[in-house]
Image (tube, rainbow, N blue to C red):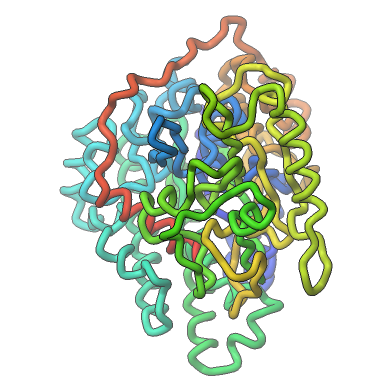
Length: 533
Ligand SMILES: [Zn+2]
């Protein structure tokens, strides 16, 4: 039986991978690309980790699975509050449960949003979890004790370390660059060690892992990694040293991929994907400041002016305190969402009446698209997508954004108060791009085939197909048949399930929420990931 290995590289982009291959840092990936099929993988409308990975593992778009961001706004009579998304907010089945239900066993490690864990036939540990909570993010729970007993795996390295993340709350100081890269290398190595152990002890039909260090290192060290910027940042011996450490991080990733492929054995299909791409960001766009200047938002008296090019407040609950809710019609609550929400009027309160909603949104959209940078006169908001479903009066998810923005340099908005709408960053940073990577390799794949861009929704159907399973009709993506040899398609035709999948419902509203401390730790993590300067 053929084995299936899926490796997620968070934020991976050919803009870096191809020079790394050419310079000899990733020889195994170079071999895989030469022998496999590859192309761009287009991310979700807002190319962000949570919607990106959840669309990857469900084959459904955010409007269907319900995950748009790390956080989601919930309106109450007292204003708007932010809640942290977890697996209970995902409204579709994941490929892990779809495969388990059809008799396949799976191992899945470090994917965003998988906690509390869903039952699978195999092993699951969620990513993005403080290490103290890893036990409750592990399925089956006995796996946690196995992990603890492994001599070469430090359980603390598998999770977020609240102390470490909080240290970075005001950015990463230069003197800590070296230690940070070492720590991230050790974290990724710990996941590789754990997965290798599981693959040796109890191999499953589908084995999947995400390396999230690629995203973090690109947010923090883009100017050392991007060949076009590295010339200036590596002029000093220290800068050259930092670049070398970053490059060695990718060398380690390459070795991990090779190790996992070798452990999987002959007759393995390998699929490598990213949740979004990456590129440079040069400026900070203060979206709520723009809304305020255009009469849509009123700042609360305690909203301080940002002088440090930050994107967000230090604590999650401070986000909602910056806005005078009584006098606000449209607002953004998190930088990572790149989203505008419109306040609808309820029982005579200030807001947009349902009959005025379409005109209100279209006018706001036009103003955003017409806005020009005060100095270079360039278009700042290059995309302002309306919520077509809500506009047409069809039912849609309550927390779905009313407008999803794209900035000209691909970055995330700042939600803070500012003296300017657009500020130039002091240093170039890395941020997300819509086009990530897709690489497939194995006996059924056409070697050396360059594919037209695929959708992130195509990954789940591809994985199900490679296991010989039926694809539920509800899945929005398709199997990229153009990557396969004709004889493989004849022997294993694409099959759809006749029966609709059982829909999952959101669990009861009064479920336990994570503590304020844990929220702050998550916030620190988001900031470290580049949602601040
Ligand atoms: Zn990501």
